[in-house]
Length: 635
Image 1 (tube, rainbow, N blue to C red):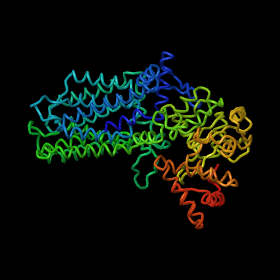
Image 2 (spheres, one colour; image 1 turned 120 degrees about the vertical axis):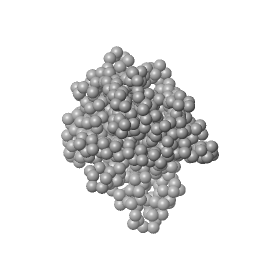
Image 3 (cartoon, rainbow, N blue to C red; image 1 turned 45 degrees about the vertical axis):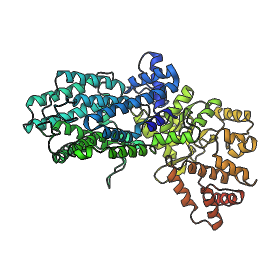
Image 4 (cartoon, rainbow, N blue to C red; image 1 turned 90 degrees about the vertical axis):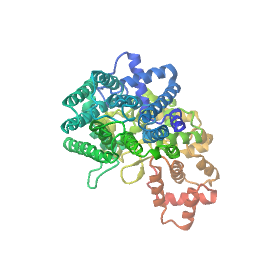
């Protein structure tokens, strides 16, 4: 577990958000105030920018100025280890030591989507601090570990502490909204306890004071009510147009990307909250009473808190780790009624090992592992995730102008290219709500793209080879099929393509750059790997333009192999090499569908190619077949 988390934290940066967080923090430190408008893109214009993580960004910026990204990685590892320590200590409050280790390992697995240096790591520590303030541990002998007495009534000291937690939290991350929303749920639980005569009315008043303290604390920043407004009303656009926001559960007949209306959301939240509370109450009543208390083992306020955690976990995959709290409480109650099971250390040991092993194939850990296998672990970024080669080319060729880019690459491109090539968009969803829709439409619709590019003055495009618009992966080009603008390809590696306008200053600069390397670039068609292979073949390897398997096959190719067929193989080889990464399996299935129905020689060549055993006799039939049967494979 610890090894897996450290592997993810110390390897190449796999998050697209860290770049703009650090960049913003450095800007604040250098200018001495918060930015009021966006200084990094060419699309946000004069729209007011209200930062929701400026405290974390200042910390990241300061660490970067002090020790660069190496220090930031070390800080990420230390912070992550600190989180695991806090989780382990919290688990010990509820279950015996061996099970605490198992639950720490379970948490690491549930948090798998978030083991990266971003402000949410601060949020996690503050969440546990808030939870310990809401439900403090009892002194030994007063109650069983982790059990909450029905009449637990917070005093003024805890109200003040919760206000401080919320006020600190909101300076660091917008997830500070967890505080008032979950305390509101706990207040509902206190109301039920009072109505059932299990607690005096002052119990309800004390929890209402806790809610007000949390709410006022989250307004103790320049953000005021901005995070509250965005969290409750303003997330419809990201949920529609950004892949990572898509809900994983879509009921039959629902529009997949349609955000819930406020009324539906309120009914949905109320039903889950109340239904979860009562279901848990019925469930936990089967385990009897805590041996050291005279009331039921779990209080209504605690049940309301657990129901709130489940509600947030259902709202987005990024909050799935919140299921850890109800799982821990249920396990504590169950183990409390099973003394023989508590005495067995083998079971929790096996569970801890299983959870840890399951963590290794998850996104950030697996990405770091692949980087280690490809000798990229010491690199700043994994070149299979971020367009490192493309940005190097843009800088070295001194290409400039407004940039059009994928959403997930915006932060990295902004950091590496700087003011010479302002990005179209990055992950700042609060600032780019309108632009998110515009970029999404421009990627998919030729007419919209032509209008957007002209209006935004786009002069430079750094984009993926393939996109998926609901009908499988397809090659992507900025050309719209009209004669108004012709984009030519001036760079293409295994991950990204750089496009510039024909007969532009950027095209001239790209041609001069390639000429300096001994490669002639066609002024109307741009660069081809065949031209590079003919002039300076070692560039294919040193610049990572093609996968090693394909380079080896190229060396065996017959001289008559066509550019088009060879490039078709390049695209296929790229996806085969990345078969376990994003969209790779879909692309492989698509390629296989295109190969169906081929004659035996072509099918044999395709099978040989997919199995990685290519020679000159196998290659040419497949090149000819692809060129004839898959004319739309290439831009």
